[in-house]
Length: 127
Image (cartoon, rainbow, N blue to C red; front, side, top):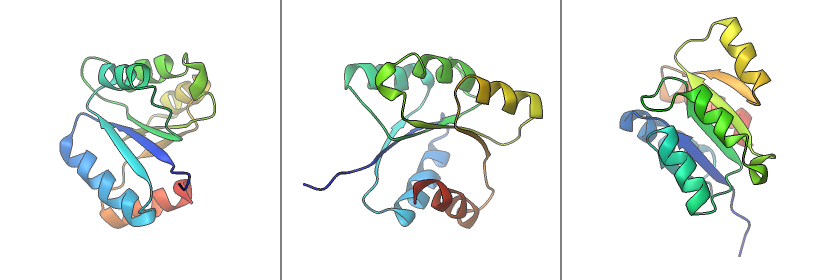
């Protein structure tokens, strides 16, 4: 069986989840995409299902557990040390970007406004 890369996308907006899935699978049809609607759900999935994604995308602004809190919890899980973690938001102040990078984010991404923009962004990350 071929090695399959896995992506975890954490976002409370179902439309953003679908938008992401469509763009990611256009770039890499073999990519396994797993979705969580908030940080608590994501942490639970990681721990209970022994989920070890290669790429994790975290929406910055979510109810219950925001992107920063989710990032901090994920970075405490040793088996995810090699995962590329991207904070994903509609806007970013330089101070926020610096803080997320200091907490272990691989990069801070601004949500593109178009499918093509998202595909272009994901092509750089997933290839």
